[in-house]
Image (cartoon, rainbow, N blue to C red; front, side):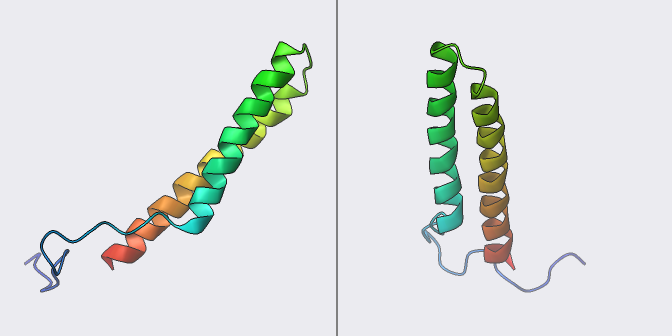
Length: 75
């Protein structure tokens, strides 16, 4: 009853799909924002809070684009 006839991986040993470009950019922004937050807090500036928020936003964007690519690859 649950078989739709579609194979998940048509070729055995198939390579996983590469990470989407937007997800990669979001991860780079996240890493840079974390580094900027650390530098800001070390210097005693509370501007690091903005960098932490930007890191959280960009990590959520990366997670979204990765999950969206996985769903598109399945169906």
